[in-house]
Image 1 (tube, rainbow, N blue to C red):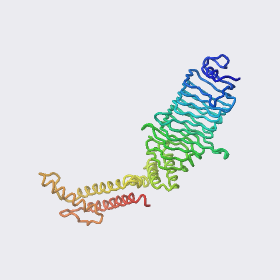
Image 2: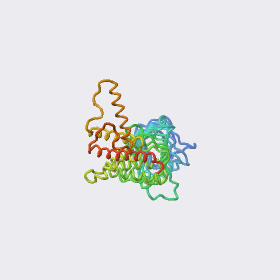
Image 3: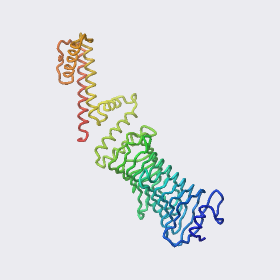
Image 4: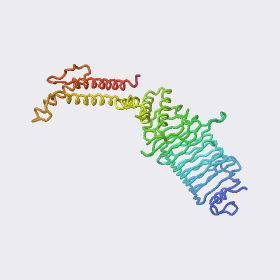
Length: 421
């Protein structure tokens, strides 16, 4: 059936009698538009009924363009001889794309829900001018099995689910998927069998409660650039692979939260291995420390006391090799603890606890600090305190103090050398 562009708009608005459907839905089925212009253009229209466009086309290759239009719900199944379907600055409460469609562009729109179902789409572009004055999406479900090229650019999104990049990609197709300049509250990747030809750039969290979830997903060969994952509350994974990712200028996650602690270890280990292959020493050290911290949480003290104590000591002394400041704090703290215990084991205190005036207070403090400085030097004499009368237990405490102070100094040096090892 051939209709004019005017009749097409009327059909969309449900004002002609020959469409198939009922009062709740307008169906545009098997129609061809007579139009001499390059674009079939619909501007400043409001469509209050759900619309289904199926097997619709034009007499020649043209663009179907909706500008400044409002849609309650629209489902598009198949377009014939339509080179490009465009929605520009529209408001779409719900849009469903399925069937065989050549190219789709959605720019500067407000979208309630967008669902991509079974079909073949050669090119899908969803874009805004910038995150705050462009595209806004409440809920998007994109199944990439049916898209040859997908671009999601400059958008603010409440909930985004990307799913099912197949492992076997036709080598003839120039497949390319790109997410760039997005502010996302909840980002989920589901059942991606391969990250090949997936480029993720400039992803930022919408709030402190934002999260990133990977479900049965292999992101091997995916490329991440200039992303702020540090701002996300957590990364959550299940049965996923991060080992083969490629990254550049990434602020990494502070926390991985999985369904069990063992998966936390696996996630950090995969990220550590990926950074090691890319010779990213800084990130590799960071994820190694995170892996050790996750391993410590997974270990049970009763089952493996020695490993638990070793990891706990490493965490307290230098954050698993990350912090030399923590090493200095640990060394001074442990020395102060053992020095105080040493003083309490002496026969008679070398000074009185309780001072009569500022003069005696100053003398006692000077005496305490002076001898503490000697105690901190691990090669000090056993009789380093004048007027002191050590007991046998005093010498034992002295030896223990030397051991733990030495350990703290060693851990501080190790943290200093973290980039040189």
